[in-house]
Amino acid sequence: NAGVTQTPKFRVLKTGQSMTLLCAQDMNHEYMYWYRQDPGMGLRLIHYSVGEGTTAKGEVPDGYNVSRLKKQNFLLGLESAAPSQTSVYFCASSYSLQGSEQYFGPGTRLTVT
Amino acid sequence: GENVEQHPSTLSVQEGDSAVIKCTYSDSASNYFPWYKQELGKGPQLIIDIRSNVGEKKDQRIAVTLNKTAKHFSLHITETQPEDSAVYFCAASIGSNYQLIWGAGTKLIIKP
Image (cartoon, rainbow over the protein chains, first blue to last red):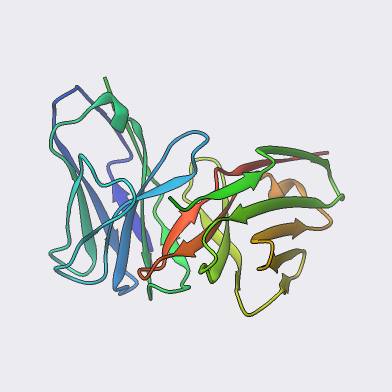
């Protein structure tokens, strides 16, 4: 099992450009999450999904959109990138929502200039 | 909003000694408290967790204690080894969707 995979690993964008980050999991998990990690701030939840076709806002959703068309995939989109979105993005998945281990991907380092 | 405070931000201990990392949380309804370890260039990985109906949990060299009255919980690592060097994050669940709120992380350095 590959677990949780993310593509790409690194990306540099100019302000105003758009991009999509792809997350895939092969553990048949219902729940998937997108976090951003900034120095000194831990992880912050952007959006999450409780199943195929569903999405919900997390702690810091502004400037991001997500889609979960297939159970195994969770896409994170930036429509118009801003320097404040420079961060490391992690995708995670879990078997259940309450008190369940989250399995993380290796992360995507995004720089917006 | 709800938050989790984690201390210290950096901890340096001699190999073989014990390390303790502490977190406090603000939401009295929180009932799940995981600890994650993040190695350089990787995603976080769960190392131990505790639920609100338990005061202490141990797994070999790792233990977590929870004080619900004071709203704080701690990670204890005994007999530290070089492979324990990493960044450790605490988290607490909040709200009806059990979202995790994360601490800012502790960089643990094991000195040989």
